[in-house]
Image (cartoon, rainbow, N blue to C red):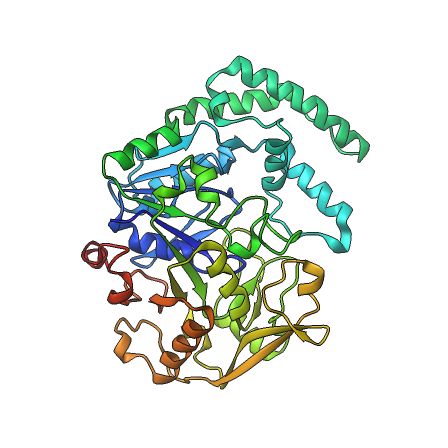
Length: 440
């Protein structure tokens, strides 16, 4: 089968975890290529909820290799805690997890720096998860980072920690913060090293060898395209490339190894934290989406801002990522809406924009142009046959397809794997439908 990228087309929280878990049976390997434990991929299996932050969402299936690439930043404690939770759940954890030796490591000084940075910004703060993701990528870019492979040589690890802590303590002293003890940090991370060294490998070499052997790979993105560090709504973005381009740099494979891109799209729009959000709803309809969609962050628990479907933003994501098909999630949240608005364009200073503006100060002032459609006022939750969907929702799907110029291939109608409509004619060339159906 094809090597397939799954990523979010909005500001994250589109439901990628369920979709990765759903189609994993069609693949041999599931690989994360960016982000850190700021991600929160939620999977429901047989009524049990599992939230994955670092480990790929394919881990709940047996005999699948789960890879954490060099584009991911790793908090070792969060990684080990996640493994412990998965073992309690009953997941198989053996030699089926691999960490790239080139993945950068998050240290205790990273979240402290992030908190100081947010305090300094005041009203202009980004609204990060404060888990040290950004400062870890910052150290990577400034060539001060410590990589997973350096956990395998404690003398090098000690030297780098001492040098980094000496520098960070100057920063902390300036802001009146407590000084860090490099020995304490080294002792802590030496302990982590002994526990995770068996997972650390050359991921680029491994994946390319696996591809030569005929194995198929599902590339799992975190966050969403509109949070991409280069192509998102900068500066209100994440610190990595959450778009399809991040696959190659975040795993060490060539672009010719990617066969298709599947974009996960919520039937409305949400955003966590600060930043422009043209279709945000401020009245009771927005509150209804928040409550019915249980729109609270899987990582932080923060309430998400809710708004109408933004076809301008999703069309931009489809173009940027070369998306072949989209997955539509959480349409049941809209069941009670009398009327539903879809953003079909933006006006700025009285003129219709031809493309999605990534400049935050422009996006913050655009006037969304809406098309109003009648709500279907009929439950779609747990429907698994496309023909049983209310006609109003089918029309909604067709309108979205026309606006973003990409076909819908999967409709998620609930939290469980089985609460899914697979549109076979759109999926047949991308996945093995028989294997997927066998595990529903």
